[in-house]
Amino acid sequence: MNTAQFATLQPRNLSIGSTSEMPLNGEKSLEAYRRMLRIRRFEEEGSRLFKAGKIPGVYHTSIGQEAAIVGACLALRDDDAMTGTHRSHGHPIGKGGHLEGLMAELMGKEGGICKGRGGSMHLADRSVGIISESGIVGGGIPLATGCAFSAKVRGVDQVALCFFGDGAVNQGTFNESLNMASLWKLPVIYLCENNGYAVTVSVKQTHGQPDIALRAAGLGMPGVKVDGQDIDAVFEATETAVKRARAGDGPTLIVADTYRFDEHNAGLAVPGEPYRSTEEVESYRRHRDPIVLYHRVLLNRGVSEQTLRSIDLEAVEAVKEAVRFGVGSPLPKKETLSDYMFNTPLVGHNNFTTGLERN
Image (tube, rainbow, N blue to C red; front, side, top):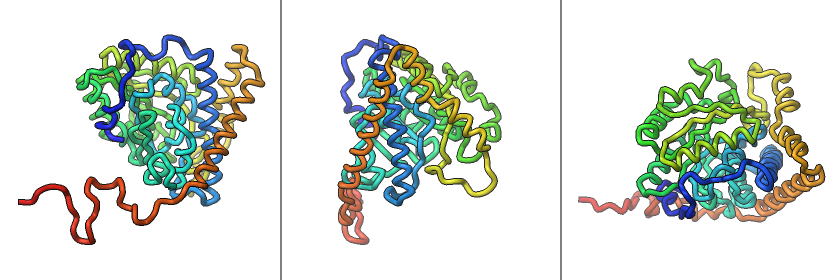
């Protein structure tokens, strides 16, 4: 899905600034918990399948970062655009996408949301407004900016949400895109999932200013730092930014401090000296698991343990069904290799038709 296709999504007839007039409570809080658990159970099973050779390529899990994903996505409408990163299996789920097509895509199957052509790192799901997830660090930042520009030109109140990691902040596209969005007051929210490490290198080793939110001031927009393990905090910050964007007041940079529980690639250890201690990882798992934290919040709000348990069981069954769908879906046929890649397909071996008239 590209920015032109984003323009075909029909905005709902909502007033400027409206996303959710209620805080994250009631049924919406249960939906938040449901989506976080769907991400966790999906990623756990996907990691197992990857290690078993059922998923090709690489597999970067978002385990530990569920609150940042879901909290932000719940502040959006279905017709709002979103871009992700190489670590973005959880983002389609956070925005309400179906698990079956996502699992089939990771398996490289024809039943996948990109018919097996996108795989783990280059997903798109037009049904929920996801235009791109990219293996290129920072690759989604200019795309989200372009979607926001499209909405502004068309005079609609759609917004774009851009997820990226702390490593992407040092890419040129970060400053170029945020400067343009600020200058033109584009309706885009830039959300940095700051998990502290770009593969194995910490933020403190790569950022002259480790407080990423402070960079916003130099680019002429609000910079908000939130606890990325607190889904309510992420939702509130994103909802405020979305309302600001829909009102025509321009972009916001949100930095959600979160943590990656697994290794960079599906729990597989990185060769060489450890870049973080076992104690550090275990401390986050024991004390800062966003799902455990929100489980306690919901219990304190009067939600029963039985209700929360049933939501978890529902997530487990949904993932099982997704695996069954993925396994049962066929692989793409060899003769369709060039499908969806070119406006005009290859003709023979040496004659590529471009569709342009040659003088």
